[in-house]
Image 1 (cartoon, helix red, strand yellow):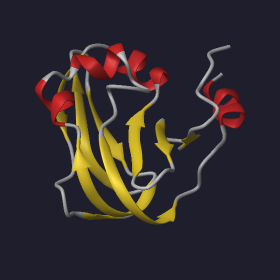
Image 2: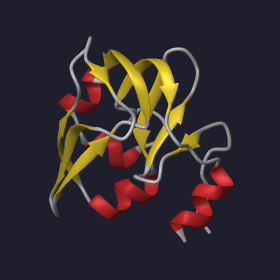
Image 3: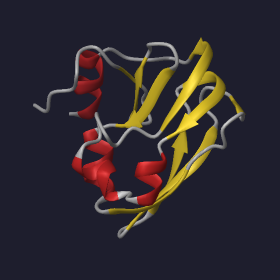
Image 4: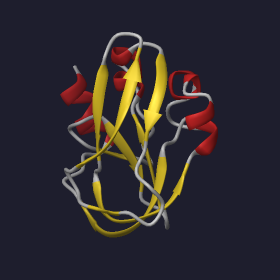
Length: 122
């Protein structure tokens, strides 16, 4: 059984949230592995108002293009320019340097703890 960092929360669409302030958003190792080699990221703009559950960007890999969903509602305050410049970091370190964007959160979406996400991922 894969393990997922306990301090994070997870969406059913395979995004993770570090609910500090601002919240940090990324995709899980399961999503990164399923995508294959990530070659391009389209992330929301800084200042964009985003809604939990809404499509906020795209992740393109050598296999496919997948929509990126926001697990929270709020305003984007930062995007990971290093990940845009070198998308391979999303595969190499999805829970660390491969984070995608930061949000000043006004509402959390329906999120799972690590144990519930691991059960969903099975």
